[in-house]
Length: 530
Image (cartoon, rainbow, N blue to C red; front, side, top):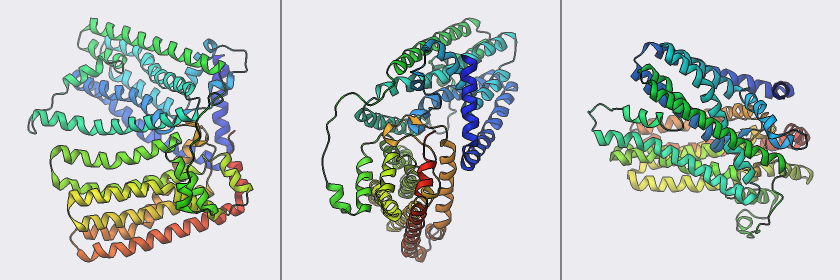
């Protein structure tokens, strides 16, 4: 069974590579990008073999424990778990969860994240090959640590996916995932500042207690054992190995329970009744035209569909992350950086519009067969997708004006937001029309990801950022001159931003809509999930 599942995963990967030129290009770019990140890290990890035990312990234990946490957090908060080997697809086959689990576990290492984890783990083993005991423990703990990363991600997401059988639960899960991302970002900003303030600016920051806490947490049991062995504390090293083994076994059993539920209850979203909420406030705002209907549906979905809720909460986190450090340091001069938040918020909204079309599923098919013009579809998506980000950006500008008390900074922040928002929305309207990929329906929640489109969506998002940067360049130049003290540039940035943003939005909606009118069938075919 292990061989069958591994061969199946490789076949699906090769099939995804051959599906289209876009898929192949996206996968190649993704693997090259992963290689550029992983190999320098691996070389640096191996170089720590010549460093002191304390330094290597601090870097490797904390770093690899964070890697384990990333395997848990990133699939939940960002994009979900690869569903090419979705357990529910095996429900009709006469095979038990016990037989499937070894093959599914090993197949998780096929792909860019799994290969990167293996390379970094091998570098970690080489770094701790200092003596016989530490080398033996590193070789023993390496598979335990790698398996823990995968099991932690698979077990939790499988359990939560089984629980998210109704739309209401998926909406709440999206909110929880978004809040978790906000809390992680805020804590990441606050903890170093708290430690530094408690010890004084001029004192040496001692990391020993942090390393000890991480090492004796479940995230660091497997990664911290060789460090104890290298110090000569064999007893603590053995205890950590035992704890890591128990943790991996517990996660394996948890995953088995979740997998058995998925195999015996493969149908999602069929049980339970939910209250239907009425209301036509968005229709009254946008009107009853075809574009207004699309805008009203998308605006309503911003607070109901898990992935959109997660993205919206992430936009709220941007001003918090920028504002908290200067507030904790009590340095009013650095509060000026809050002026960067409005352009970032609308830029994130534009990037979200790129992937929104591919995730529409059957709803986009309704637009095509009903005779809706492509321009109405593009225009409605911009209205509905940008309404909440614009409200948030305007609120941040007003708060920033009160905190900074500098009219010129507020004017430049508004100008940059108008230019970036209009150009990014226009670029998204065009790119999402000409480039589609298979993706799970966005109503399936914040925990789904399709293997065929993840890399391609990343490539298209990079194109969105590049187009936005080029289009907003004149406004950014004026903002730079205004920041340097040129008063004329501050006020000139306002009309230039309106022109750049308006032209970019009009051009993207027009060109993208006309392209959809000619290629509705091709777009729907490209989005069909294999």
